[in-house]
Length: 424
Image 1 (cartoon, helix red, strand yellow):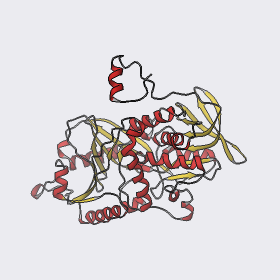
Image 2: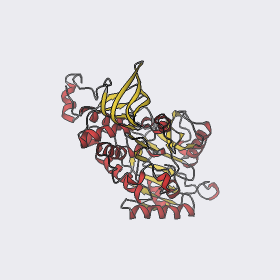
Image 3: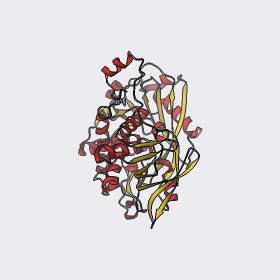
Image 4: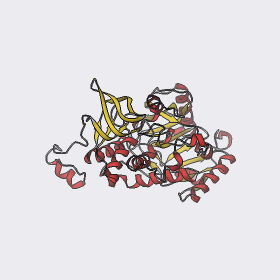
């Protein structure tokens, strides 16, 4: 069976009708016991399993997913990858992740379709220009690329934006902006499948449709999980367990006996019918609370702000849909007649300082990766890398040290929402 993807193997397999390819991963049955159980088969959970096996040699690992791989937030986002953050702690974290994305297709031998088309942030007022100047300069101080643009340079990048002046002046004039040219977008399912394939090839068990319902403790320490798989109730033992379940983190934390400072919201997005290339960058307007890019299939991908009421729905509200569509017609008038094909929402885990939680929990033997809010997809490599490190060694990775749960007791928050001025 062919396992490695290459141009030569693709041509050779064509002679056999591509019938001799090995499955990308094995859909395993759960064993009674593992060294590590990872709850959640999204990008972060699969990346954690891959790095445990790849870098730490820990292969007696199970990834338990209640649905199908990548069916949660990994498959319900707008696939943007960037590191344009303000605080040094955040900048190091997300820049590491962006650097991993840049070489991820080669490492995983799986095309993740990473397109570094740049993320362009628009300025509509003098205040926006001042704030973005501070933001870009902070990025440069942190060693991350950032380039301030005037209105003419923005027009050269995205000529379809609304630059009307005079009697037909745009409601939101574009005075300039800034761009991180190394940023861009990747294919969400390809990232999940690539990590799943890499982890399974190294012996990790990937178990789909296996819902974790509780935890087994001994002396206050987690020694296993309760799970429901194919109609059967199971107890799966483990040395350590990790929660990587995004918007459902607070639910499973409560089952384990502790509370998280997490509120779950719906974050929705939508795509239009496919058209020929019309957008050159990922374009963001903080003033309008919307952003746009174009997929490899030609669909215009449109995202907006959170529905600001706690929810586990996966559709979102009409109010936000209306705001996003109105913003699209305002900023890109030539797109106004496009028909929307699909709309969806992910359940995001928001914490008070809009920064993640990576590390140990108050329950011995239980670790967590959560709190990424609206920015979890771009952090998949670093989330998996740092959680795998603490699971394998018992010590926090230096990148994750500032992002411990304990900071909400000490007050040492990293408030990126206030600092960078955008939703994360």
